[in-house]
Image (cartoon, rainbow, N blue to C red; front, top):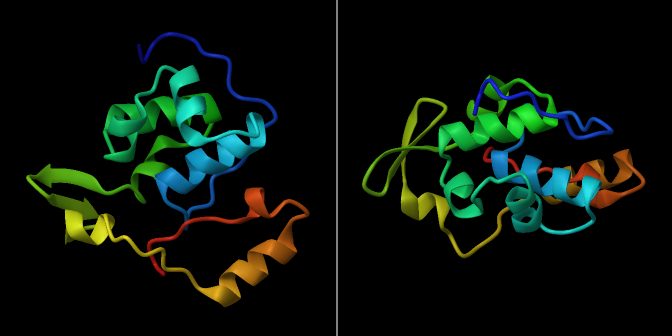
Length: 130
């Protein structure tokens, strides 16, 4: 699969090195289809459940479609290291950290992102640093 030529998504949407892989996929979906992540990933033959779990070959596949460096996305992707354990930027974290029912964000960051682009859906990025 890796050697197969693909037509990258156009127009190009750059990856923000502070955002998560799920945030980037959501922005790509909003930008290119106006729809949700699952629809975009399914259209690219990427299983959404496995992508959300950080399956590396699927992150690489999305990066190829988006014409971005896979290493940049992988650097911000929690990678499974065992049962309910993940590695995120060299830090061991639990699955509980990733599955919190609460969305945590910085209101000042949201305002700054909203002001940076006429379409907030494209400007907002999910960040683990929050």
